[in-house]
Length: 229
Image (cartoon, rainbow, N blue to C red; front, side):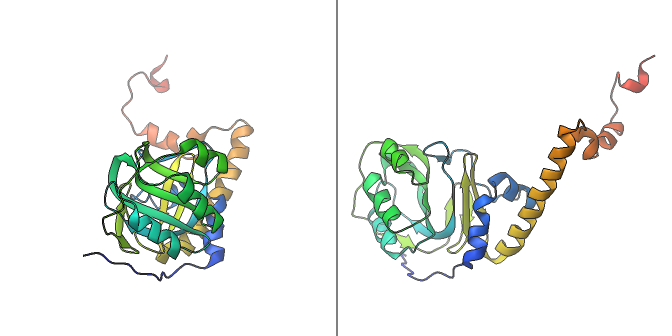
């Protein structure tokens, strides 16, 4: 069954844009590390890539990009194409020209569980792309696919309208229904880390600040300070 749903319930712009200065590590921390970060095989095509935008989900046949071309025409400014190509890395599903089209139409980036090509040109145009691999072979254009359905990408379930956050460390998915509260907790976490950083710079240790010393005291450690005469 192949489905193309042109409409998406997008979060408010203020919420999506609010994640532009939130690291993926912070998203992971405030969501309890419950599987919202994609696996380590999903990497930015170039160093310094960053993105935050609304997910337009695509289910593509491995080695074929016809449905990806269609998805580009349905995406709106600020959207991120999130493509499930079943992890296939022996074909470049998209390259410079498709990324140029996305950039010209103000998309926020592309995430593909599969391979891309034209890495150098994509870096030069500074368009954020995250992929599982790079391969020079071009794709077919003969198989159907689906747009704006539930997909699995990088080991994470992604729904159309979720918010994608990407940086040098990887990718995090923010479920749309919880986006506002996750954004609020993220900024609270950032503020708390800034305060902690000041204490560390003044010589304090995370070991005491975070109460790890109390955890340590409960361990049966041979040769601890208390046993030293």
